[in-house]
Length: 358
Image (tube, rainbow, N blue to C red; front, side, top):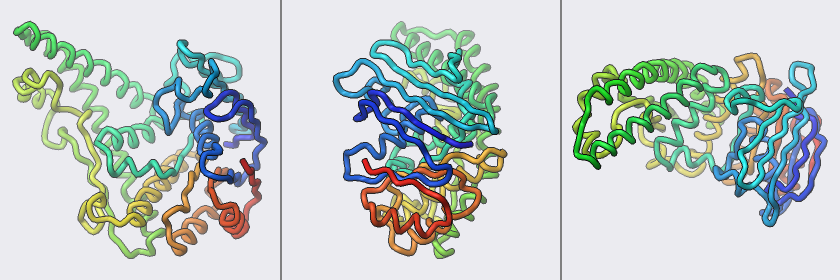
C-alpha cells in the first residue's frame, strides 16, 4: 500500500497543489493555517470518502469556487490505482476508481486502509457515545463489508421506527403490528452488530493495552469497557419492554445505537482523572492499536500523524519515535509547526523521507 502522488484542486485553502511522495516518511511543516492538516485530510478523504475534520462536504470547497477535486495515485498489491473524489456545489459527491464510478460509496471502504492520529481525537474522550461508536464502526467496516451493510440498514430502519413513533404521538394512536415489523428487523441486525463489536473489542483491548504499556513505560493501567443494552438481554424483548417509554419520548431508547465505550485509567474515568499527557497517550495508543488490528488483516495501513508531538513530554515523544521506527509502519505522513523538531525526529528514524514546506 503506497500513495505515490496527490493533486488537490480547490480543496480547502489549496487552489492547485501537487505532491510526489516518498515511499516511507513525508512531513508537512509550516505555520498554523497554511494547510498542513488539510493535506492530511485529503489523504484521509481518499480512503474514507469523507473529511475527517469537517462533516459538511460543501465546506471543503475552496472559498469562492464551485467544486473541489482530490486525485490520488496509489500502488496497491503492485498494481497502479487511481482514486478521484470530486464534489460540485448542489451535486452529489463522486468517487471514481480507475475512471469507474462507484455505485455505492460503501464499496470503496477498506480498499485503502488508513489510520489518522490528530488533536481532534480528543473528541473520543470528551464527546458523546456516537463518536466512540463511529470509531469502532470505522475499524470493523474496513475489514467486514457485511458489518458495514448491517450498520447502514440498521440506521435506516431505526429512522423509520422513530418516524412512526412520532406519527403515533402526533395522531394519538398506536399500532403494535406496525412497530413489530420494525422491531423484528432491528433485533436481527442488532444481534449481528453486537456480536461483531464484542468480538472486535475482545481482540482489540489486549492490543491497545500493549500499545499503552509501550508509550507510558508500564506506569499506568488502562482498560476499555464495552457498554451495550444487549449485554443485559435480547433486543426484541428490550424493545417490547421499552415501548411505553419510546412512545412518550418519540424515539427508540434501546439498541446497539446506544452502545458506548468506557475509557479507564487505574480503574477510573480517563476523562475525569487523566492529565492532558495521559489522555493523549491513551488516544495515541487507541489509534496505534487500530493500526495493529488492520495490519493483521494482511494490509498495512497508511499512517497520518497530525501535530502529534504537541503537549507530549520528551520521553513520550521519544517513545513514539521508537514506535514509528518499527518495520510494520510502511508509509507515514506527519504535520508539524516546528520544522527543526520534525527534522531532528525524522533523522533519528532509519527511513527515507521528504519534507514539504507549506
